[in-house]
Amino acid sequence: MTWWVILMMGVVVMLKAYMIHAGEPQDGATLVFAKSFREAKKLGFNSCVCDGGDYIDVRGHQIKSDQWLKINAADKEKLEAGVSHVIDNPPSCKQCELWYDELLNGFCESCADDGEAVKAGGDYE
Ligand SMILES: [Zn+2]
Image 1 (cartoon, rainbow, N blue to C red):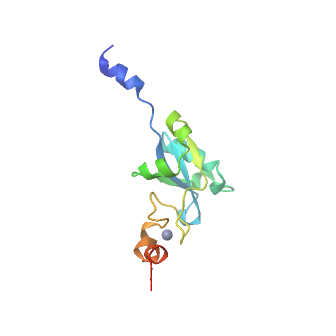
Image 2: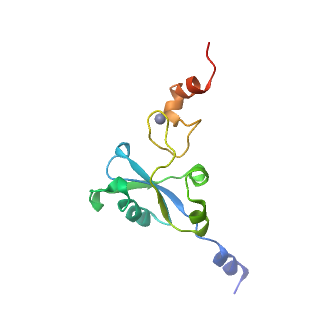
Image 3: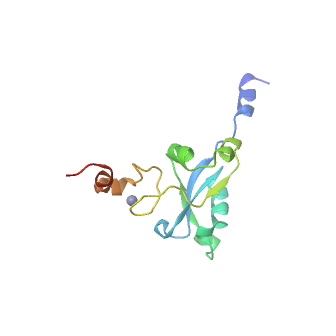
């Protein structure tokens, strides 16, 4: 056995972050940490966000920049153990209540651009 095979065997399967929803993400989306999109879809379908929907309507995508979510939203123990899991209430924007990959002072990128984050956090005369 060569050294790289031993190295490969020691690598824990990293979970990826997926946004799963039943149609439109605006109607509610759930955050799923899973090994594949297929698995994320299955887990998302069983969560409350897709309750009453058809499996065929379940959509989603992988969140490429998932570092922030892994630190701020994931179940650390499950993440480290490589156990797929659903986060029903990921940290969401204080204004529009949607969640994204990253929040700036509690606001999503588009709300922060509106200046709301500045108003809420800054000192005004
Ligand atoms: Zn927002």
